[in-house]
Image (cartoon, rainbow over all chains, first blue to last red; front, side, top):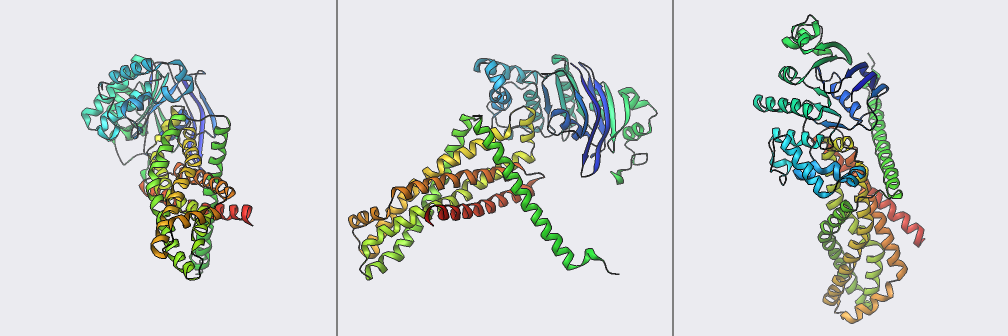
Length: 241
Length: 265
């Protein structure tokens, strides 16, 4: 199952946030999307996931594919415990509710919690969990429907380096386990190095770099060099963003 | 140099236009959500578990404050009315007047105000918090319709349980008025109950129940809709909650006028 984005355009209040964005993510690959804050990365994910509509362009993936998203701040339902959060789509979606019995749902939730290394916390509420645990519960909820496409919005934002490494390992682990096409929006070079196969860089709604992680880190693209060296000097002007 | 944008007139008109735009936006959002809710109910897309949960909340949360407000109001009316009527030799009319005023007007409106402050504000802030923390977006990605899951159960709870709150609080209010009449004008409880029936018509009770069902659904719809369309952060959650309360009060006043004009003009 691959994901293809063709000539995507999105405008907010007359400002082009995404301008003719095109890329393809093959089955079992992870695309990293990098760029300054406000460059359109999260908007891109919201359009792929169906939260926002594009002005023009196409999002192509096989019909019936499940698209899942892990949100920046987890977006766990704070009125539900961990079990109910993960089971939410299985219980509330009519098509899935008919498919699985309560026993099967329980088994699936336990299995997904095991995949993210969080067994035995089913009864806890999101407010009782640490930031890293919330992210992993968010991952478990995202993958409970066995999605073919997984989107991660800044999965390591606000986490300490050790927890970030753990989260990056889970991204790789889940991709391999589910053989899904993944898109990771991130600012972290460590995430790009550990969890991503190739990268696109957005600046003012345009793709300014597209290539492998190696090319991003060592290539001659001036946008990539500025990003990797975290320099104020370069073609990307923060003042105009 | 004369600059139009700095003039007081320009700024006043600009602010006024901003307010009008804001008003129309809110009205549009409520209208849009009404259509969505109606569509879900019409297609029987109702989450029964969540509807029961919200109904429980609607009835339990608002009942104590409704009882307190309606009880106090009816006691105050009886306190003012009973001695005056007794002086004029019309103490026997106390029950009739109390039931007329309470059932037709005060109990529905006072219960609605109690529900706005207790339940409506909590609906608005809860859904607004969900919106700003992307929980509603998460629902959309998980292919669960947030209107069906969040707003429809609340509107149904309001429609079915506001009349229950009204019946209980109006009964309590009339009992309070009876005791206060007995205390202030030495009107026997038997006389009070006898005169009560003279002012209590079945038609009035049915109109009041219909009015309360409309009030309940309106409060739930406005509160949920104001929360649902919230964007931003903590400040916007507060603004949405205030907006929900103000709009609900306004809507109740308008509905009350419409019902009075329709059934009593």
